[in-house]
Length: 349
Image (cartoon, rainbow, N blue to C red):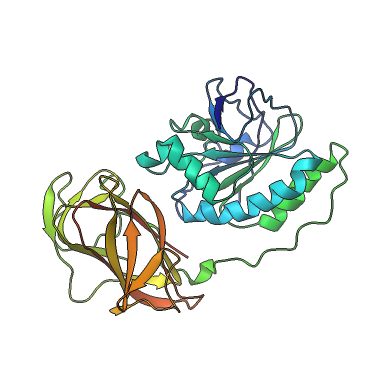
């Protein structure tokens, strides 16, 4: 359920180190300058999900975090946040997710609601389609965690997928300050990802932030170009094959068939893919020239006649490859069988 809330909430921030997409800034312009200051208020017209009608937020210890439904970094963090909410909400902890879209299609509230249902998010989520909250908190990355005390003061800020044990201890400290009796900390989760073994950064395919593009042809922005791949692929560079139009946020296939090839170093491959008209399209996925198998397929892959496919409908994050923690260099090949296939980004785990 979505509802506008007129009451404001005070919230907080703590900084850690690991975030693929963030850029270093001075303390005066980064999140850290907000530590020890009142948390910015939400606008009266903010749109909320998972908030019953008539709800009023009170000043209480609060964990505020930024996430995006297309960011695998943020999606992995949600598992931890959900555990904290289940454990500490009855002790007075408020948890608020700020959904700030990485891509335009994420501004659709129904798509966000679908992501909330898929990730089993039970705490309040506020939509930040215009990045007003993001700007007020001087945020730079998904995920970022802001810890706010019961007086509405930002106490700490953590950026990225690290220091979860420290964040939980700090949350307990905030609750203890209100007189709550907290249980022992949760047993640390085994990290899903060995970041030291991921050698390929996030790749964006739209001309707004185009990175690591390997095709030899000149990039034509907003126009169709026939692209090709070199015989030898340069690691951490993606190659398009076929007639593609590189638009602001995505690469759009204009020909009947086309490919994306990438030599990467990681264990998992995720891609934000879509279909121009939200019709169902198929793409064949291969690893090192071979169809995927039960030892390396991602959860969104299915098999038919010895081949491995992903079915693309609406734009979202798809898991294509999972080698079960066998980190190495691989080549992924995605063969799109129809025009109007969209590629927004590639991410790794």
